[in-house]
Length: 214
Image (tube, rainbow, N blue to C red; front, side):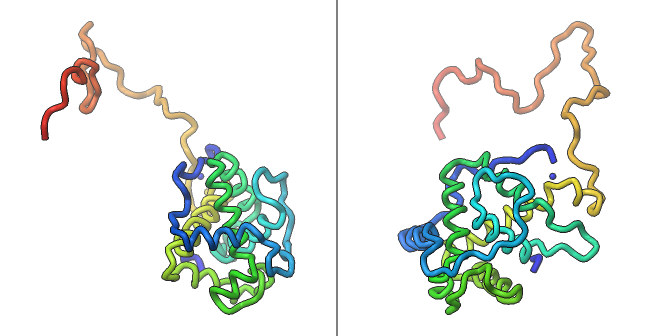
């Protein structure tokens, strides 16, 4: 269904999911993953200790990532991609962490699945084809929360996968630069004269006085 390692980058500090009263209520349901579920079906455990996600949330994200990323047969496997997602969340605002955890709960919640798609089954208990259908329903839903939620989880899954150096060789990507300073960059030789400002350089004296009228 497929529709970098310089350190994990924090997701936006704005709320990950723009939502109204209905969306907030749906996320509230997702916060109670035990409600109407038969228990999360776990796959392979995390290769390293988790910082944000629980073992059940890790399993749900693992199932989602397997459907969204779906590596080609000759591509590197998912590996520790979901653990990397956990590390991305670890440097995100607490509000973002809470929303992602609620979103994963809503994906897994049998009651939510029944309300949305008529499937009274946790996401991790569905076969791969039905999991793909659920994700497509979220992607194409008329509800903003579901579309935004799908986009957020897709972004996290892809970021977790492509952050691994194992994927870089497959894509012929040399990796991020080791440093931003270029020792071979041209050096200003102005005969003792100060180096001229580049376009767009802010000058303190230009900020004095009143702002011009539009």
